[in-house]
Length: 424
Image (tube, rainbow, N blue to C red):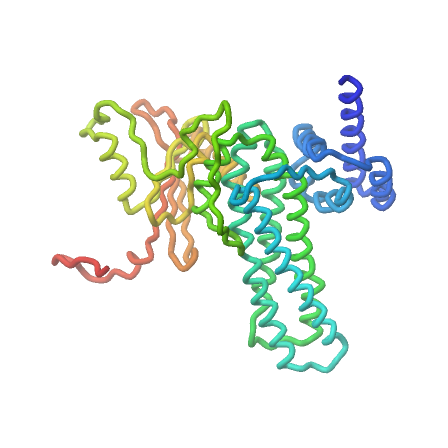
């Protein structure tokens, strides 16, 4: 056993050294060859541990993102796959089948890129070019469905890894998700059917953003299936997977639509309370909740939060998400896996600095409220307000986020004094 531990330690130290050399730009081709020759088999868990150690030692996450694709390319094919069998309909089975569909779309785009070679150095054929733009746009519209796939990882899988102390890989992968989202968005913005574009400009787009977009998306499939999913299978309990399965519908599926439902059998040591889909709300027994201006029983309070025309999320004084209202038309999706999660981990890495500033300003008493609005969020005008919660003596109790779709309010004119029900 001690020999195995020593070998593992040596492999990790060597891998860490290699990745730091790649990061410094020291002869990347030579380093890659050394990695390939010295590390014929690298267990996925050791790659993850090294990544997490680098973050813990102070290497910024953004620095890891810079060479993430490079070291993934180096390790691709060398990683030892851990293909534990999973039943049809299991969340991992769904993730993998979605990946097969994502790969099919990528191959269609590659076929279109072969057609793009025809326009290189030839006189512009506007009809041919526009038809090619339309075909590319169609496939990238399909590929944009990966956002749902990524959100399920971010909001359903990552919280369980973080609770197990595995925080580095989720942060890095979320950052890569955002990079892919950004480049896919750039492709969408650039491909506008009917807009005049020369063949040479379209060819340049292929090199600048279209090929990188599909390569990054394809690389994510490898990272997911060789690192993330095996790690999740080792970390999550049966009860955890049932929660993931029950809450998958909040985000939807990516291209693939499962035809088989997963019917898990409870494992020894797991509670059987999670083996059935969540069908409603369970209420704690006891008397009413008495407040300074009245009282509610728990069923009434639940109905109140569901019915309020605003979405509420409460983060307590220790920066943990403690409550959210689950109204049927929420602006931002929420699920119960975020309860107890550090609010910083609920946001993409690129916006964490804003969260940190709000928390610091509220805790110090420097500020008490922060307001944001988006004029076109999925066709809605959305207003967001963060307010510091304080007790009677001014002690900081946390933050409440209130979100509301105010599109209809902006259309109001004059007075409404007579009874008039909204048409259904």
